[in-house]
Structure formats: structure tokens, C-alpha cells
Amino acid sequence: MAIFNIHEANLDSEQEDILDSLSSSNEVNLVSGPPGCGKTLLAFHLYKKVHQNYNADNDFEEAEHLPLASLIMHNRVLRSYIRKELVLTASDEEITNVEVMHYYENFLRFLWNGAFGKSNKKIPTVKDRININNQRYYSRIDTKAFFHEISCLTKQEQNSFHFGHLIIDEGQDFPRDFFFLMNAIRSLWPENQPAITVFADENQIINEQNSTIEEMLQSLSIDESNHKKLTNNYRNTKQIYKFASHFKTTDQKTNKPSREGQIPKVILKDSENDIPEYILQLTKENKNKSFLLVIGSRAGRKSFNSILSRVKTMLQTSRSEVHIDGYRSLKFNESYNGAIVVHEDDLHFDEGNIVQVYDASSKGIEADIVIYVGPEFHDCSNDEIQVKQKLYVTSTRAKEQLHIIITGNKEDEKIKAFLNLLPKEKGIFQIHA
Image 1 (spheres, helix red, strand yellow):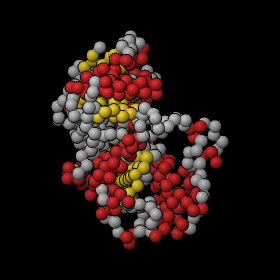
Image 2: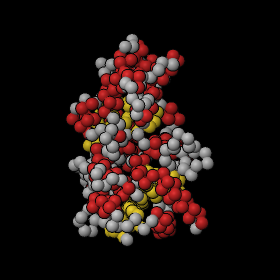
Image 3: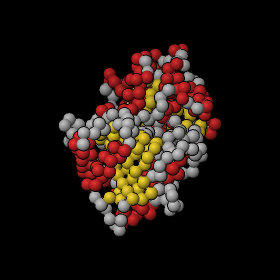
Image 4: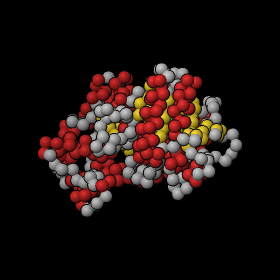
């Protein structure tokens, strides 16, 4: 399951021009574009360019513990894939000089611990300032206090936070506070400032804590001339693109793909027990294809595990050469040891394999055939915009075929609400009962 064709020779002129402008810049840039336009590809190659263009004269001795570039993203699955591509395509020196990590707070802890590791100085959290009972916010980093601590340091001590070039993929997944903080840290050096490059797609926002393009431009003080736009969709067929575009929530210039393919299918099954047989048949009809099995997050862990277990058993019983791996985050009392799911680093992104994830973990990934199970469990009646965003993200993962499976009686209210979100124009998708 390739996320992108990794070789730089495969870049088009639009991508090459943007990559060249980014690699020679120590400014703050935003690159936006639709799914399949090469944002992750450029993020991957940008770190290599940073390494190639490295000038030791611009380095701070206090920041020698930091890599030349840091590539961060919110998605663990995407991070795992990029790490594997690094091992396959990068030199040992290049790997040493880049840090790939997920989640913005991990990057902030990385900076903090690099500067204060020996002193064990405590990183400031929101709970230190405000009494919050909500467990979700219990240990969240306080970005204002974080910057205040740095601003009180001597200039030499501040140099240990000089992060070189920060590359953020899927930037819409990050909160505005993080962008404000990184821009503030960057301002500590009037000359030889760290660079920040953000790759983002506003149509792939899936929760309220994400950032819009306008919010990123404002919080990072990005001039419009530093807002680069990719426009070509290389991933989807014409049919998948037309179906997915129905769920866009923000206008976006995109050159429509010309590649022909199958019309997306919406399949109505009586129960969850009927799903594995459908998936097995797809693997038989599509040899040597990559499969992404996406489960709606509201379907729950029980459904996730049940589908994974049933498909795995059916593949083994039929002596299929297709292998399935499932990834989801674990509860605090769970372990990957002996679990039906695997750690993200143990996923097999290869042709002839199925990777199963929740819809929120599908960003950045692509596969020949995408199967989306359980989107009707989202609140289609009261949260239409967010459900559309999830449908857009998941649909645009598909290179050749898209199958959406819903279960239950079509007279059920949740089924009716979901079907009501689908395109009304005839010929955009097929429905199979």
C-alpha cells in the first residue's frame, strides 16, 4: 500500500517549483492542496533538501542535539509509513538528521527535554494554571507558559530551542495554539530564524480543535505570497473524485483527474456478519491490489475487533494469500502483546494485504481499494458537516475502487439520515441491497 511514489524524479513542474522555493527559504510557508496532490510527498523530500542545503555556519552550538529538520504529523499510521520509507530510501546520515514524530505535544516535549533534560525541569501543563477536572485536558501542555519559560532564558539558553526546519504534514490536524507558539519561538531570533513549512487541506478537518487555512495563515503570520497551492489530484479516478467532491465543505481549486474507473458502490447489508464474505470476494476478484478497510469510529471497538477477527479467520480458512492487520489505539489497561490488533509499526503496507483502521487514522494513506464500514453510526442528522468531512477523507483514499458498507434496515432512522447525505445526481454511485 504505497502512500506516494517516493522518487523525486516523479515530481511534476508544479511540485518541483514549490519544493525548490521551500528548500531555499528560512521563512514560514503554507502549502495547501487537495488529496492526492503530493503534500506528503513534498514533506518527505523537503527534509532531504534541508539536509543537502545545510550550512554549518548558520548552526548554534547549543542546538547541536536537535536534528536539521523535524517532520511531525498527527497520524500514527502515517508516521509509521514514512519511517519505513526513510529506512528504504535515505542514507544513515539523512536518517540521523531528521526526527519523525506524531502529535504536536511530543515535539514540544522533544524540544523541552533536549534543553532541560539534565535538570529535569517540569514542562508546564494546563492543570498547573487552571483546576480542570476533565481528564482529556489533565496533562495538556500550556503553550503560553511554555513560551514564557523560554522567553525568560538567556539568549544562549534560548539557542537550545532553535529547531532548524519544522515540517508539519496534515497541518489542519493541529490546534492554533501550537502554531502561535512555534511562531513566537521563531521570533526569538531576529536573524537566522528557524523555518516552518506546513502542508494542509482544510477539507480534511474532522474535529473542532483542528485549524482552517485562514487560522494557520493568521497564527503563523504567513504572507499570501508564502501560501503555495497544489492543484493536481493524482490519486483518484474521475468517478471517485466526483463522488468525494460532493462532501467537500470548503471550495478548493483542483484540476480534475482524467483517469477512468468504477463508479463507487454503497452496499446495504442486513448485519455485520455479512461483511467478511463481501471483503473476501473482493480480494478474490482483485489479485495483487492493496486494500484499506476503514471502520467508522462510532461503530465502536467491539465492531472493529469483530470485523477484523472474522475477516482474518475467513482469509485463513480459504487459504488466501491476502493478510490483514488492524490498528487502533489501546485503552490504558490493554497491551499489543497477544491482542488482535497490532502496533502501527507492524502494519504491512504492501500489495495483496489489507490494513484496517478507524476513519480518523486513514489520513495520508492511499490504497487501490478502499472499503468503508459503519459510517452510518456517526450522527448524520445533527452533525452533518463533520460526517461529510469523514466521508470526504475516507473516499479520497481510494485509487481505483470505493465500497461503502452500511448495515441494518434501510427504514432505520440512522440509515435514512446517512443515505440522505449521498449525492442526489444519478450515476455518481451505485447502491446495492
